[in-house]
Length: 104
Ligand SMILES: [Zn+2]
Image (tube, rainbow, N blue to C red; front, side, top):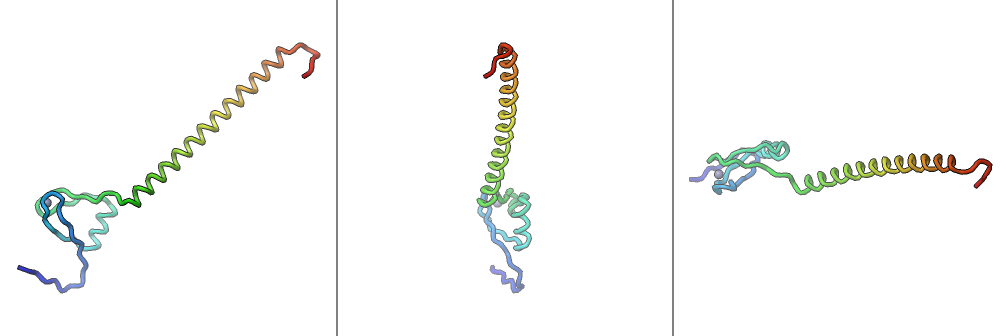
């Protein structure tokens, strides 16, 4: 049996990853599923979902690398400030040890 749909709506075909049943969603609904990543089911009840696209994965990896870089820079600033404080303290201690009247 065949069904002819003469309406101008666009459908997106899906094939269940578990049972192979082909089913269709309206294109707009399918697009919303891709955006929200909510799960959906084939007509036989097998759960399906869209995973992240490659561009989404790359964007997330890039954003995480930027975060790690920023954290690393903050760590370096903190270490530099601590090293400067230790240097100032050592210079102060050294001046106290020098005999009075001597110059460098
Ligand atoms: Zn199925």
